[in-house]
Image (cartoon, rainbow, N blue to C red):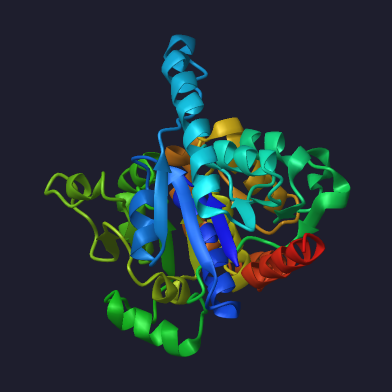
Length: 365
């Protein structure tokens, strides 16, 4: 079996792609898997670190604000199409899988032109432009939310959920280990703050604006600041309470999740899938800098089912921490949020996608 997996640009695309690859290898150890990503993006580091070969395309996203910049974007797209055709000819895949992001466009289009079956994986509740364009030729479209027939042909849609990191499980043993690992007090409430792999400036501002209230509350914070913000946050300019534990990056997210009574997060599709599987109460602050405002739509899908709280990015500095400090002390609300988000969980997503891959390949034998 020879499979190409294409897409990337953010952790939200890369983690599901690697999870799918791992699930394929677990079932078919001899399978050959090649990743195709965008040059100079996160996947060019993360994929080799996970043990897979990756080829980069010079593709870039369209600039909707400055149309003149798109002259170079079109040139890169044309070059990427040529390279994608060469990759398909050289590797001769049995199938191509697209997980969204710029690079999946040229690659899956080139695969479809060669009559190689394609499968799409759409993480968000609002489909991205690339996947909408590729849907017509796809054999199957694996989605994480109901109601996706507004974007895709209903007969191609399969509700699989989003593949997530496989080591994420919350246990009492991990909770105790987490208190020691993060130097926390087991008798105090814990809020985990995550802003994506690079951090979230507005969420960080919100915490810095409310240090006095945090100190008075006695609630402790595990705070993933992101590498761009860490040095400034730990500088003497900010006198952080002893209950606030800033970290550039959290290496043991399983322990962080286990100790958290409440999570503050952006509303990326992958993160939301993890919260659902773990049944964690969460306050979502959607990023306003995401194409087609995906994150707001992801958050709203949970808010409608009373499975999360949403605070707009523009209101975060004023409202986020006061709301979080109130919610974390309300046992009834925490329990309700936890129970409701757990009902949205779709476990074993990567294996379900492998089942779909098998079905498509059997039909094409």
